[in-house]
Length: 58
Image (cartoon, rainbow, N blue to C red; front, side, top):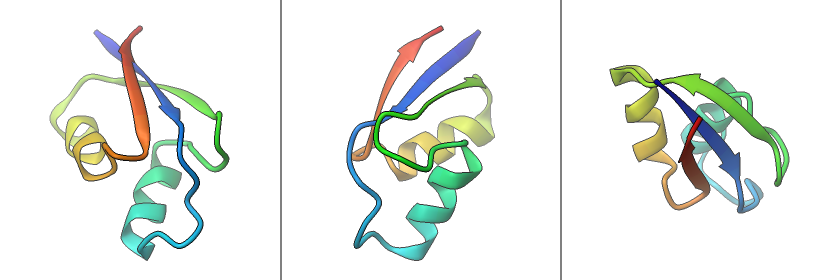
């Protein structure tokens, strides 16, 4: 299974680790969408920036 991850809130003013997490998922600007595999690492990243992203099943 895979997850569609969409950045819905800006990274401006966020902590450096949250910005780095978003970048590692391939999200740089509001509206960017990335398809990631559903594994422990990805789910941990999603949980860390859950207030900034919208997640759906791919």
